[in-house]
Figure 1 (cartoon, rainbow, N blue to C red):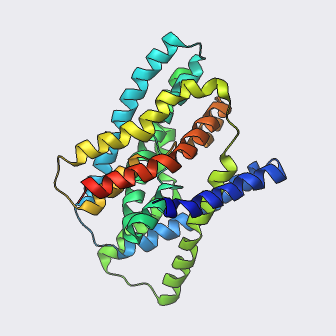
Figure 2: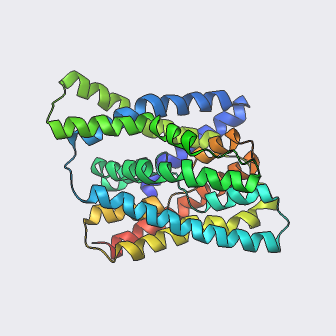
Figure 3: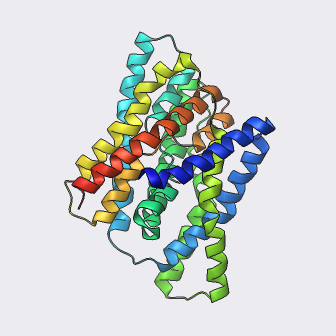
Length: 309
């Protein structure tokens, strides 16, 4: 597993160095994220779902993802009450802490990790985990929590649904499934084009993560730590417990557990910026959890290797 993560760490480090050398890289990062979400990731979705074998695991993975995220949210809310009592923290930051405990970077880190560990067939589980669980919950319940604690009261279910339906990768999944179900075969040059576009996803995602990492603010690390522990340790532990109760494909189980162990969602930075909340605290949560994940992910990979057959 460490050998799998070394290339990712190196690419992320290049992103960090690039940011240090060129200063403000927000426009570059934004451009990379836009092109990945709108072009390269939809291509990966179409390619993946047009050729996969459809099975019941495709329905089970989002269900388990929902349960895991809701479990982590519950723990996060409980921890937020304790934090509010024990530490002096702005009420507006509590929502960020709760979300940090619950939503993982299942695309920008999850897709490359699953692909490296379990092969391209496992990518479909990462996409299902994200677009039928993480994205649905973060843009509805997640945004509601953030705005509730910020006192902005700007949550709109109509706006959330509109955002979800406008996600290009979701349409990529729909197109891929339509091609799969109708038995339509794409011409070779289209398949090769999709392959070429798909291959850019991993390095660009990891490089973007590197551009997002910041130097830690020691003052907030102790406040963040219980929430990050929930994300990196309690979530995957719960995933192991709940998937063990059901008999389904081992590769799907492995994917669900690994995805539940991912560090804090990179997209959270964009959402926090949209609602004018604490970007520094959010960036710190992403940075600390991402760095720690290079130690926790190999641990969970070993656990999965032993207990999931």
